[in-house]
Image 1: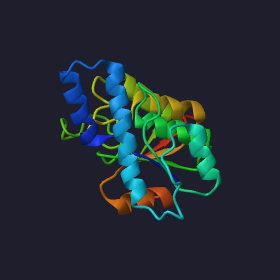
Image 2: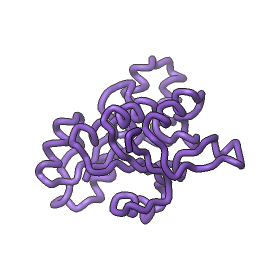
Image 3: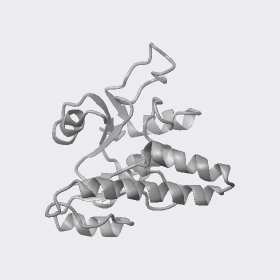
Image 4: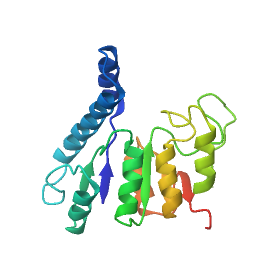
Amino acid sequence: MAVVVGGGPTARQYIDAARALGANEGELDQIGIDTTRLNARLLLAGLDEDLAAPSVPTDYESAASALHRDQVVVMGGVVPAQTTDAVAAALAEYVDADRLVFATSVPGVFDADPNEDPDAERYDTISTGALVNLIAGGESLGSAGSNAPIDLLAAKVLDRSKMTAAVVEGTDPNVVERAVTDDQIDGTWIRPDDE
């Protein structure tokens, strides 16, 4: 099992402060990556040391090596201009994962922003191609709380790899656990176009 941790509000605070100080986008990306890796270290500290890899991998090859040793991998960002959504999708593709679960701040993928449209309906299932089109067609669809809780690059990785993924609301550990272990989820399945 691998867990890819995002930066969350802490990263946004650091990025906003650095932007106010005049940092460029590359520097801001690195601050975000560093924050995700710090969050990953925090999660790693809470795991049984016999179960988890001893450090946070900084690339896919190191993560795959730890997974092949049957260690739980916890990682954050990898390179600038790539979100942890994309890292999770790329890692899942790299290791040919059985399942990818995006535990986000929203309970699935919606046809409209549920925070702005009270009639927004959640998809039970959406194809990877339709998800790519939905995200590419929206202006704020990749932002927190939007109807596309993963970014365009992650969706494109899912599409090219023909990978199945689930999107669930991640604040309830029981919902996340069911998404990892069961075929019945409280969220949205993202499936390859030919499925």
